[in-house]
Every structure is written in structure tokens, then in C-alpha cells.
Length: 252
Length: 342
Image (cartoon, rainbow over all chains, first blue to last red; front, side, top):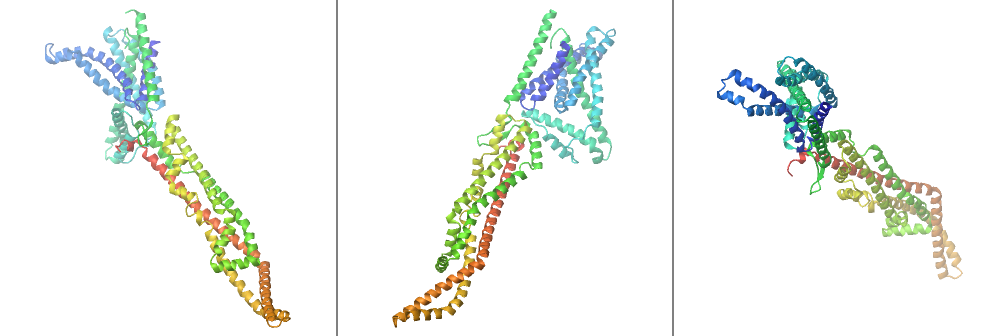
């Protein structure tokens, strides 16, 4: 029951973000919540890995080893990764269609199956202290790769945006004007993100006509895949952390 | 930690988070304003609504929903027809009266004296228009048309406001602000289009003092011609009969030789003069009265058509002006422009 409540809470956070980000800077509260949950998830993993990182490569009394062993570096790294990946997820989420968002609700249940699957798989292989971290990581990656594949298919069959023009500058200008927020910081971020999306579309649709090499088209698809994977990974990682927090001894 | 405590902590966290999300959502939905009026009375749209606003306004402008639709325009045109016809209706009833006077001996002499004194137009104007209070009637008709058209404009702008409000998901308070910004009320319309409203109410060239003047002038010209024509006919008739009238009068007066003969001659000549006039007028009436009335009716018709056309043109300009003003105001409301410092 708590697992489903945690999934509901995670989705509610994203929907509240979607409903508030454009209207008020207070929309940053759910955004900050997501980033903190995500950084908490990454921090656990990075804290575990820092021991090996320090001991496998450096002498134990060296400065790099001492720095790498310290908890603050892992915390800082976790926060920055969470900020970047979580930011992508937050900026992408409102741009997804309701159908895509509904698909994500279904995907959250699939994620549970991934967790159960890896939990059974890892039961006899790994140390108990590493097991949870590995299950979290594998489940998140598996789910994000699967969803990236699905989004690739969706992208291929989705209609071309109306803002697309022959000129890249015009395309970026129009795409930037199609989103807005009252909060100036968020306004800037969502405009940049919308322009990034427009750039991908422009490269995919107009790139081969405008540029001599098919490089543009391929690079667009590559960027799209990387960006999509990052977003779905952040989504999966966030949900996984919420699920494990609900199951674990301490609430998040 | 006891499992029950963990469980309680989770649920506390869950419900608290949900309450926070709900409060945040309510705040964003209810407290964050979409529209506000500044000190200068200009409407500002929240920046986050700018993409939606652009989309809605572009769509509306493309579909030309701002313009009064053809039904409203047709209604205004029909109202102009009806009201102006109504104002002219008593004028047509005066035409037989003018003809009666024209084809009477007294009327004939009155017309001749008025023509000699340069007052023929005043006389015709008085009979055709002043006696039936044409000017006040016309002004009232124009006022009614203006009120009707203002209501049409108000309704059209109200519908536009409703369309925008529905698409922008404005609540009642925001709709009120939008309505204020659209300046839908008749008072503001009148204030903003003062010169138009004067013209449309009949104070300008289309109506007022100018109305009827042309028809009066044309009828006076027509009558002048007729009087001259009749005078020529009568001159011939009188030349033929005046001598014998005077001779008869002189013979009748010869009982008193000298003075009696002279007075009898004058009286006889005068009687023949009047009798000749009467006969010529009656013959003229018998042959020409119908054509005379039809001619005046045609002149009145033309005057009526002229006023209708001028009025319709004035209303076309008026509606185009409202349309342009409304479009400009909606364009200016785009936040991308409003965000710039004034």
C-alpha cells in the first residue's frame, strides 16, 4: 500500500509542478523536493562507490584518496547530477502530452516489476548493503532505456511542430515564444529548453536540407536519444527512490 | 524504530506532502492573478498566459470574429431603412396638401408673391417638412438607430469577450476586467467616438438642418418653372379675352357715362383676369396634378435615399473604427509588449 502511495505522491509532485511552475515561483517547491529526493538516491550510490574509487586507484593516505573518501564530495556530485537530470525531467514533463503522461503512470507500475525482478535476481549474488543500490540502479536504467525506445517510436510518428520554419533562427524564436512563466528564472529556463527541443526538430526535419552532410540528422537523433534517456533515467530514479523510501525503515 | 512508528511517519509525511501540494495548487489557481488593471486603467495580462493569449487572439483575428457579423450589420441596415422610412412617412402625406395649394387660385398668387420675394423655398419647406415636425422626427429616428447599433456593437464585443474568456479560462472577476478593458459600455463608446456619434445622431451633414433642404430647393426650382410656364399660357389667354372683358365692363358701366364706363371696363378686365387664371389652373390641375405629385414624391424619394446612404456610410466607418480600435487594444494587451517599461 505504501509503495502505491509513494508512486502516487511522486506523480502528484510532478503534476503540481506542471500546474504551478508557470504561475508562481512557489512552483520551485515541488521542483526542489524532486531534486532533493533524486540527490538522496544518487548520494547513497556515490557514497558506496567512493570507497572503491579512493582505494582502488590511490594510496590510502594521499590527498586524492582523502578527498574521494570524504562524504561531501559525493554529496556535492549527487546534488549537481540531480539538479541537471531533475531539471531536464521537470522542464520536459509539462511538454509531454496527456497521453504520454498517462503512459508514464503505467510505466511506474512496470517499474515495480523491474524492481521485483532485480530483487529476485540479486538476492543470492550481492552483499546485502550493495543489493539495494544495485537494484535501484538497474531498475532505473532498464526502465529508462525501455522508455527511451518507446519515446523514439513516439517521436518518429508524432506530428511535426507548427513552429518549425526553414530558418533556424525563426524556429528558435517562435519556439521560445510558445512558453512563458511568471517567475523570471523559470521563464528563462523553459524558453531555453523549448528552444533545445526546437533545435532537435529543426535538425531532424530541416537539417538534411540545410546542411550538406547527413551529420546534422544523425547528431539530432543522438542528442534526442541522450536527452530522452537522461529524462527517463531521472524519472525512473526518482520513482525508485520514492518506492524504496516507502519500503525502507525511514521515511524520506 | 518500532514498525508502527515507521508506518505512522510515512503516512504523516504522505498526507502532509499532499496537503502542501494541494495548498500550492490552490494558491496558484486562485491567488495568482491572470489580469490586472494598472493605475492608468490599462489591462495587463500575466506573462505566463502570453503564449495562450497570442494563440487565441491570432485565431480570432484570422477568423475575423472581431468584426460585427453579417447578421448584425444587416440588422443595423434594416433599422436605418425602417427608421428613415418612418421619419419621411408624414412628408409623403403632405404632398397632396402642397398640390392642393399649388392648384388653387390663392395658392397660385401666394406662390407668385413668395417667388417674387424669394421665399418660395421657405413656403414649400414649411408645408412639406415643418408642419409635420420632420427635423425632430428625423433626429429621433437617428437616435434610435444609434441606440440600436450601439447595442449591437455592445453585444458583438460582449460575445468577443466571452470567446476570449472561455478560451483563456478566465473567471467571473477576470471576465469583468476584460469587459472593462474592451470598453463595451455604450457610454464609453459614445465618448470614444464622439464625432461619429454626433454624425450618427443626425447633428452632422447626413441629417439635421441639411435634411430636406435639397428636396425643397429642387421643388422650388420645379415650381418656379411651372409658374413661368403657366404665366406664358395665361398671358396668351388673357390677351385674347381681356379686350372683350373690358368692352363688356365698359358697356355695363355706360349707364353712368364717363366714370361708370371706365370703372366698368376695369372691373370687367379684372374679372376676366381672375376667371382666366382659374380656368388655366383647373385645366393645369386636370392634366398635370398626378405628374406634379409624382415628381415631388420622386424628389422626396431621392432625398430619403441620400440620407440612408450617408447614414449607412457613416455607420460603416463607425463599425470599422470600433473594429480597428478593438483589434489594436487586443494586440497591445499582449504581455510581450506590456512587459516593456511604459
